[in-house]
Length: 285
Ligand SMILES: [Zn+2]
Image (cartoon, rainbow, N blue to C red):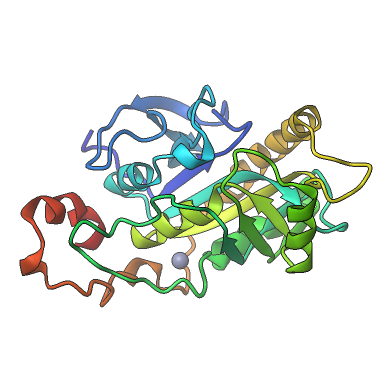
């Protein structure tokens, strides 16, 4: 497996469980210090660029948002050299102008999840990383700029509110989120982003709007409606990935994501157990 060296990881969400666009596929099973990833990694090439693909709910959609093994997922991607993560997920819209079928490239999130493991730290080692700018917008911009060519309506920037789920919102919650000025709602990106950032990865999110959550009186979210729009969105995101990945692969971003761990660990390592340090070696160096 040591011959595999990849720069780009793609994480698929609801509806995006595999991609025929990935050529020369090879499946990789891996165990990490944080357990097994959501599924086997799919190694291959998109537009002749090596990538690793991972469906975050597993290919048969068996993993709840709260159950996703984000730490194992990011560890596994990083182990094979991934530096940039393209995170694809379905979202609800909290604004009239963000229509089902549109794509949003959020630049901020608000984390309303409860009690999820959202860090590599703990068990005797303390660290804090900055999250003022959670997403790698240099990469988001590349994808955003390709959307118009493909006839996809897209929005650059926006606030993603991440709820625990798995239930969708009540009307009161949906109205509350609108009043806060949030743009889109989902159940995965905040936790995934926190873990990816700690792993020193460039993390960009593309959010595929499937519905209007439940704030629009006549347009309450139902699983049928979600699935219908989801299918169209999945066709579009596949085209967008094929179009964007060559450019993403040769772009050097201006951010400092890869250096995020410098100065982040506050615990003197001589007080940390050998096991924990070994488990975290790939993450904290
Ligand atoms: Zn970055």
